[in-house]
Image (cartoon, rainbow, N blue to C red; front, side):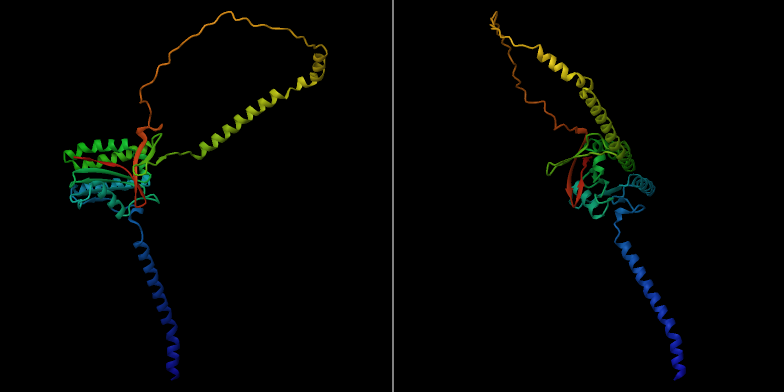
Length: 303
């Protein structure tokens, strides 16, 4: 009996250690799997961004497009998605593009910033969908210009060149920056959101200039109105003026010599035009709407 107790006493600590070790290891692995499963596919680079459901690209074209998109995403810190389909499931090109972007959890940041390009062979339409901050770069005028270039390619069944044309346009306008006077116009509510941006050094420079201008102006006013020289002679000058002053009254009569009345006709403006769009430039307008917490814009072109 004593031998059995000694054997169990020597065996139990090692067994407990192994059991605890494997338990902790299993919990750690489960947490890693859960963390990986909860990640949004739109938040990490290196994942698939070319979805060729219609089979329009060759294997080499898909590889080239994927590589270029990954580089653009890294540079812009925005998502770029390329989709083709030959079955829109009864949806319009706009609705298909929006649902694909939302259901795929694409986008970067809390505003889901990014852009999707759809080549819809079912509805015979190409569609650009800017989302979030991308609407600031791809205004109505700009995405229409991209569609102009892409239209010629898809009309000639040059599908790879059409996708490349889209990527060229996005890269071009991102590097050009947000145009002056850019604003988002919500087509559902009519709300206008004007883009305003000021950098920290611009604000600091403005403050310094304002302080310098205020200091110069104040010092000039103080010097001008201090009247140091006049104060020494003020009392004597005032007393001398009063000593030699006296009042005299005279009767003055005004005589009317001539009278002339001139009539000038004022032309009436019967034209009702001439008003602008509230001071905004049409070139900087981005027409948007909200869907599932995302600000979406863009449009399509039939082919």
